[in-house]
Length: 236
Image (spheres, rainbow, N blue to C red):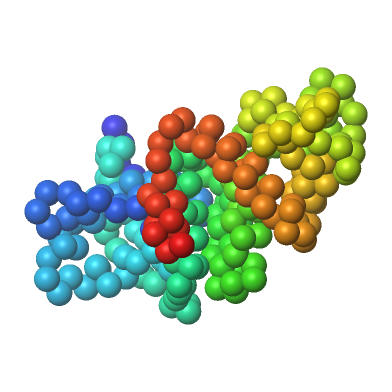
């Protein structure tokens, strides 16, 4: 297998795990190469100059090389140390990182999603935009990974979603009109349309959009548990 070398690639750290006694395996979401896994040798040693740079939510310039699937990190630089996420924004950021860790395939370039992730981190710094940022990022992630949602027309008939009607939404299929009494798995058409247009602006649409996206994301996770959700529960 021919070796490869990448220099100064913009990336964000999304997950780390210990490797041997002094190293880490890091998962990074890079602009041009998608999700990559790299060995960061020696960064768990005391006074490692590299360790201080390997922080989440901070855009980095990563360099790596190697001949295998798991390559070696050779250099780390910080693009521009931005204001840190604080409070609830930290948990929101970890949630985005877990979604990327679990739902992205390795080495699948998604530059539009990379830019959207970067802008979402900025939005999380403003408490009034946090819930909106999470919902819209979930939408973008599903779209970019081939699971985009059809939120403005009904499954089968193709009829336009009606704002004051109730619908069920199947993750693999789409929206179907609810006949008869409402139930807990029904969503107002206005919610689906507001989510589609990224214009969630009422308490009901925000609450229903969160419930809808949670069910869809959980379906995509295939039963895997998100630690960030447990962190949210711990704060409530």
